[in-house]
Amino acid sequence: MPFLKNSARSKVNTVFGFFAVFTFFVYLGDAVMSYVTPVFLDNKVSDPFWTGVIFATSSAIGLIFNFLAGEVFGSKSTNFFVRATIFAALAFPLAFLLAPNYIPMYLLGMAAWGIYYETQAFASFKFIELTRRKDEYSEAWGTIATVTSVAYFVGPIIATYLIDHFLELNFYVAIGCYITAYLIYQLMKAKSQLKEKAEKIATPVTPKIELKRWVIYMKRLWPLWSFGWMMYLIEAFFWTIGIVYAESLKGESELAGFIISVHVLPTILIGLIMSKLKIKTGKKKWALLSGLVAGVILFGFGWARNINEILMIVAGYSVFSAISFNLLWATYEDYVSREDKYENDLIGLEQSASSLAWVIGPIIAGSVTEFVGAKMTMSYAGLALFIGTIFIFFVIPKKIYMPHKPFSRI
Image 1 (cartoon, rainbow, N blue to C red):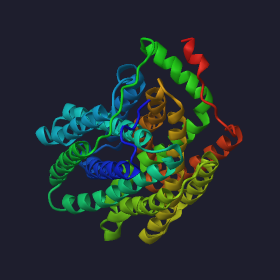
Image 2 (tube, rainbow, N blue to C red):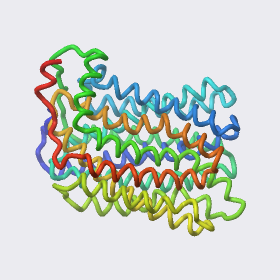
Image 3 (cartoon, helix red, strand yellow):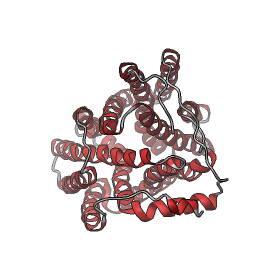
Image 4 (cartoon, helix red, strand yellow):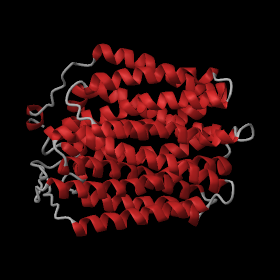
């Protein structure tokens, strides 16, 4: 397991602060790219279904990465995942800049997106385990959620402004963010004495063994994984058809350009609150309850009569989804901290919920939108979350124990 060479908490906290700033710039670049990419592809492809298929490439690659993470990257450190994040992140906007009318380059860019989104999540999980005590996991994820939310609040505002002037400027802004993030991380490394030792895997790992490990984990975690998948699915809806819908409403009201920013804004406040709390028990229950309320609120999206009501519904949904996500990540961090050799397998499994949601989500969103429109698609998503969460309430165990003995027989 990773260990702290310098046990001085003040220095560790400073190092964590550097990592939080690094995270901010990574996700600021991602927020800009996340907003501009659906608009860019909609202009180039002009078909909701095929735009969704191109989007799905990103998460299909991410899902493959998650599956192979334990096998290929089992001994890799936080530094490795940070370097991989920056390299892949730079490839994303560069692919669009170098060949703006060449669909294979769109696919290459989306594949790079899928890789760096996952490697950044791995870096965060590993860094938090390295620098935080178990009772600080909720606080740490609250901090990460706050800086991430600030990035996703600012990013769409920047992107909206640049789209109205020169769309391709967004790509250069994203590149600048990624380079800044890497420089901050290098500064953190230079100023800290934080060390980590590589994990060792006792047996050779093949895709078959990796699949068996995921099956073993899923037997314990499938209710939690399924809930996370539903939450991520709605995020995919927001960041695909939600953006296109917001742009389509700009003719009616300039406030439409703030739909995504309003979606993100409450998570900043929730992240700040969660960073002050040290929740030790009941994380699963409160995550599910928050998801239940979020689903009810989002169901009202289809009946909103004007942009003001839409913004209120989005804000309400986002408050409870932010609570749910924070508690969900903290719950998984508890499980990751109990693992030794297999923590990458568990992180990969958790991230696979996001990847699969982003593979299926844009395609579902695009297909349903063609029949009922973006507004009712979001409403039906809220209804599905409500029904699914009720079911999970009845089947999830009060206490989930991590398996250990079954791995020794693989």
